[in-house]
Image (cartoon, rainbow, N blue to C red):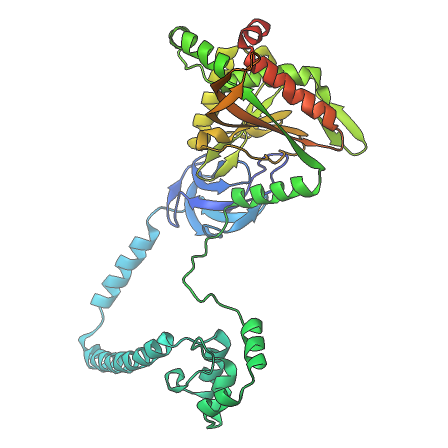
Length: 433
């Protein structure tokens, strides 16, 4: 018998949740065949069988949390698939070979089973009545102990819910109506507050996925472990939209991909990071680590939650390279094909809430990074021009959240101002890129 254990996944991943078993007990597997899908805090990974044979037992169920090294299944290397069917056929043959003299005995057993069914029906009918009664779990337990029918008890709770004290009173033969009149109002309020153990209206409980739990934990950690602050500015998108309109057809024909806004902001962010290197750093203990590379994380929303795959060496890519990198990562994220290396690292993050219509937000840091750029929806607004005329211009609010422990307000404001200048003069940005 060979044990299958959760293998080493990655340096930063030590546990996961079984999302789906790809095999069942009695299935024939070969060494290297995927047997289950494991959901980790970053990506879903397949666990493969490390021996050939028949699955003899599944030690864990879907939804169970497991750690590296846990035994999750056993494989019989000498077994044959379909053993359970052979056993059942053998049992059928044995039943057929039983002597006929046992038939009266079987008939008696059948009659006894019918009687049990009738009694169980009566019992279930009584149980159904009790289930229709609104009562706390403690009251139901006490009623079972005392052998009292909940449907015969009147509740003094204004909401009609039976409580343990109602059951006790009924067991002593007391009048619930009299007790209800005598109970002080303050005591009623106290009971309602102390025993608010259930919802009064329908709810649905859904277990958080491993990834959602990790997202929640990391977002809270980012707020608790950093001095996070956000500064804002607004960008006139007129020139970028004009340039994009002029070049989009030739760009797509040449590079086989559309020219979007993200490549402009990525290029601008890289340029600004070079001028303000502390925003491209992180804190490790009492040291500041300045990163001499520009791996830009792109926040992508999926059905399972937010992930931040990374465009590597964005400073070395042209506009087409950035657009292809973003499109490839977004497709992999939505198809659940991201690998661990797609998510690791990153020196700075860009998130675009504008695609969902967001006008303004304060993005949360992607720790241990100390800066994140938030983009928003483009809306036409009145703008006073240098010649004092008022024009309707396509404007976007941009936000920079930063860790105030190593980034001062002056640097953060100047960083955002530099991005604004490059976006409003995209021709210069193209030349620099």
